[in-house]
Length: 294
Ligand code: HEC
Ligand code: HEC
Image 1 (cartoon, rainbow, N blue to C red):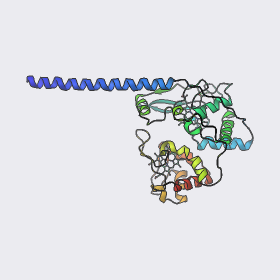
Image 2 (image 1 turned 180 degrees about the vertical axis):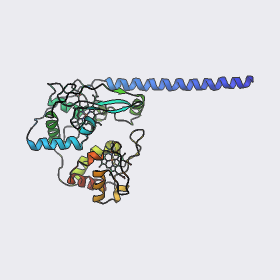
Image 3 (image 1 turned 30 degrees about the horizontal axis):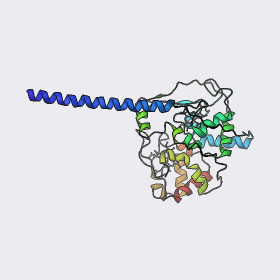
Image 4 (image 1 turned 90 degrees about the horizontal axis):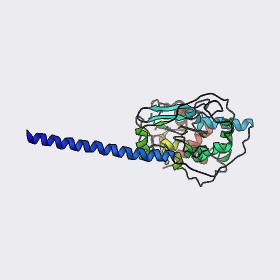
């Protein structure tokens, strides 16, 4: 009986020590992430002339759709709570219009560029979960068109709450499994890309594929699910299942979310409503680029 009690005490002690270790580890991680979230940055400001002709605005509207801006910030760009999940937390995409809760009246082209190219706001505060590591490689005419379009959308009053980053998001960020701090993922010395290939071909496909690399990985070979509850991300190169698809099957999948074997993709897992807006030429270029990868 005594022996049993001693054993019980031992097990209890080990258990308590383990809990204590987990608590200490979590506080260390949480402290680390909070510091990185609050770290102030300073980058050289950039500026661009912003044309407002019809063709530029149309290009800008197209980019706002195919780059996912409207997915996170809402169709009217008035912002929304785009993730609200207990352990991950609440992540809020800003109101980009000039309405209440949106961009201040003096929000300039340089401020847009600071967000899109460096991943910080005008005060140098890191923007959380805003994929600036992708928009930073947009070519100059595309940045001009995107900013031109965003600057003239109608003002919408929409005051939103702040972020509330949960423990799972902190641990995943600490392990490098969640892009919470794009500012840390950008090569800030890299100058703006002067222009991008806009004709059908591998060059355009590569340029467009940046939007796919966040989930399908930089080598586009896919991998583990990007968040808890998501399916694994498939390999899009010539060595994956899509490597055997015809162009028609590829286009049909990206326009309807339905794969050749009849599987309906959930738009929350893979944004096919976004890929549905790509032009025929853009999808054909992506197809050619993926096929060129082994
Ligand atoms: C994955 C979701 C997501 C996508 C896609 C996205 N954003 Fe954001 N964006 C956010 C979030 C979240 C914030 C708020 C960040 C913060 O304040 O910490 C934000 C903030 C911003 C800001 C605010 C900057 C500031 O000064 O406070 C701008 C400008 C912006 N986004 C523009 C864009 C544009 C243009 C696109 C398309 C190229 C885009 N975003 C795509 C999530 C997204
Ligand atoms: C937010 C993450 C995310 C982004 C961004 C994304 N994908 Fe996906 N994609 C997925 C996931 C997850 C699946 C698997 C969905 C499923 O199995 O239901 C998938 C599936 C696919 C498939 C079907 C592949 C197969 O073998 O069934 C194609 C094709 C595809 N994506 C192309 C693209 C292209 C092209 C882009 C960029 C323009 C892109 N994806 C951007 C997450 C993403």
